[in-house]
Image 1 (cartoon, rainbow, N blue to C red):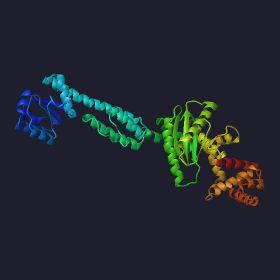
Image 2 (image 1 turned 90 degrees about the horizontal axis):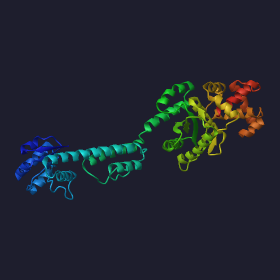
Image 3 (image 1 turned 45 degrees about the vertical axis):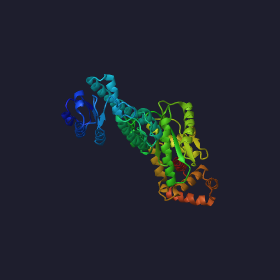
Image 4 (image 1 turned 30 degrees about the vertical axis):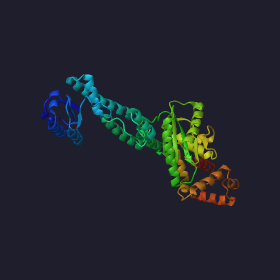
Length: 449
């Protein structure tokens, strides 16, 4: 918006759109009767915003009506500062008073006031955008930030019941549209967070060689892959089906918000198979004290992410370094839940055969060896692989005793014996051979981690 001085009524029609046209005293004195109405029509044709009279002039009712009809403000700076005046009228009246009627001073004052209004609105909009970016995608917080920055009352549905006009109104409208988009899309940093989540899932489930190749991407996305990790594995306690996946989606959504508010360690969350995996990362190994802190935080996080009416369990790993350590953590957290099926929060045992087996099984070579040994069982349909591996493990753990194995798996001893004979046939194995027996016993344990 510019301010133009008009020294002849014939100049009005040639002014640039959006101008505030200030008539000199001589021209204002001429702008009476039909001449003023012609000037108003010319101003409308030029796209002018307002026509300012600087000398005492009698304005007819028809001229006022015409000004309203053609949307050109007709301003008398001696009276336009009165109650009910438009924002532009108030600006002109203030400038007229401050310039003491001097035309040059009036021009400078009006231009400065208009520029100041635009600059102020732009600065407010910039503060509002910063507030929106830091509001975490929460509509109520976004509305509060916009209200504070723009000086208007904004509802969580991003509407406002009036406020200043002019540049501020235009800026507020733009900011409100941005606010609505931000609330719909979530936090400004969610896109990189989603990318980190997808990459984290790949790191956990991809073959070891491929996981190593993903490390540069992880570093580029700000995933602290080289530091020390503890994994918290959250599993809904319910049957498979659409409801289970809906619960997992809810867990992931709540965890994404919750971990953003946790201070100290770096937190990242991702869906991995039938569980939500949350990774707690610190720059160095904090020992047993750090693990105890991780367990406390896991308990607090479990309460925050669990949907109402749903049972969720959490397994906590020990601390390991780097991408291979991250994968070991994932196995440990899963094992913790398998070993302790009663408590909502299960921690991995720091000692014993399970730890040795876990570290061995976390390598791709060991996983392939286990698959090679058990493949004929794994190829069976339905729930047969899990049932037969459970029977074989119980039989081997009880030194080949069908009776004791039957007690553990809740079957008749004759049923155990029939299944063991079938397993020996499928695997082409000799369970009387100590080496084959040990290899299968380790494979059964690893397969159930």
